[in-house]
Image 1 (cartoon, rainbow, N blue to C red):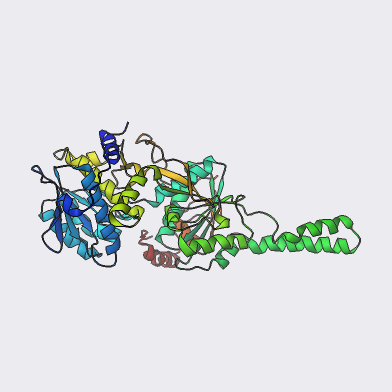
Image 2: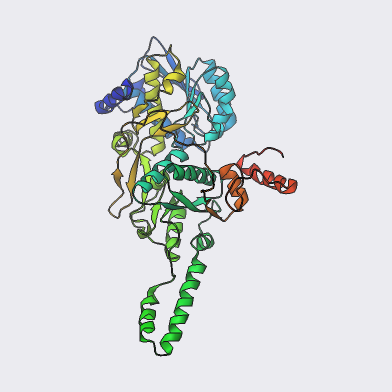
Amino acid sequence: MLKKFSILFLGLVLAGCSTNSSSRSGFDAFNSDISEVNFGSTTNFRVGVLLPLSGEAAKHGQGLKNATMMALEDVKNPNMILQFYDTKSTPSGARIAAENALNQRAQLIIGPLMSGSTRAITEQTTAKNVPVIAFGTSEEVLQPGIYTLGLLVSEQVNRIIGYAAQNGRSKFALLVPDNNTGIAVAKAAVIAAQKNDVEIKRIAFYPPNTTDFSEILKAMTDYPQRKARLDKIRSNLSYKAQNGDANAAKVLRRLQTLDTMGDVDFDAVLIPEYGPRLKSAASMFGYYDVFSPKVKFLGMAVWENTNLNKETTLNGSWYPSLSRTHSIYFSNKYADLFGERPSSLYSLAYDAIALSAALAKNADGDLNEQITNPDGYIGINGAFRLFENGTNEHSLDIVEVRQSGDEVIEKSPHKFLSSSEHKGAETIVVDENYRAPRIFGKDKYLAQTLIYGYQLNPENQPFGYIPAAEEHQLVKDSLKQYNVVIPDM
């Protein structure tokens, strides 16, 4: 069962308080960097909230702050004080903000937003044994005591591949940006494929800022080979038809509408993009004769940021999202209070404050132990839980793209598997039966090293790092842009 906090949180949602200004919550700004909000508590549990209230991320910072004010008003915990600190959208600003929060006796840190800022405060907060619940999505900065509520790549990929596998898809392709996000998606997909007994057949990397997917998809879909196959068949049929073969002429006419002969070797493709790039990539698949439903298009939560209902290529596609059932309350109330629809990111701040309110009730206990309770919590985004290594798990909806509007086709689970089952295999098992995916748009051996931690030989067996010293150094230098370090030979 979920903790009692789950019931408490649902209760506060149903209560639906209607006040709508920060002044009604006791807001009091006492300098340009720090402001404090509470309900006149006598036994204080201080929560330092580190947000980018100025600088390039200020819009998101203000949205997150608005969400924290909503949550504070809803939970009405008299034992909790929120202390706001401006990170100024920089790691150095986050470091100063964390120092101020710790000096003012913060027992818990909410934020920062950016992973770089989280990395910047880690030494300070761990030295003081003050837990951090951040919003970034880079798993590299996480560790015991440094958590995130951000929607991680690995949980999204695992959810969508698991759902697709349960619904008959067994051979997957990935179209990913050639950066850290693309590598994270690829690694998570390979792990998820093994957990679900399906295959990753192809991984194509494209320049992160491109909107021209013609060449990479031409290669990924074997378009030249499939077209050449059709051209050869047509040539043979044409020769026979010219020599009086009526059946050949009939077949030739039937082939007039085709551009290629033969299918691609995958029945689902995952594209972790949004906006114009997603639309451009989807349309180019059609240009190269790859269509739904024979190939199911799969996405990630960022698809919610793009109106896809008029994209015929993506009609019927699936993607994971935070629970819509629970988030309707948050979205509607936020719009009423602040005059705009909120980003799903802001709802994570609401959950962070509601979790803080639950922790405040037993502030004398081990906060890390409470934060990582394996039963988890139910928040405005549905069920979630945090793990000792700093990662998290959300129960995610599966959404289908339809012309009439996106629809939830499988609601998020109401509870989690036991703590021993939730993660499954977190490493990639390579044995004599394993077949590595084909790589496009990137050096095969570099891609394999980034995804697997080592290269695979032609039979797809691991043989360690590159034996030649010069090649080894070349790969080491190439890996620096991904913050990956491999040992010397």
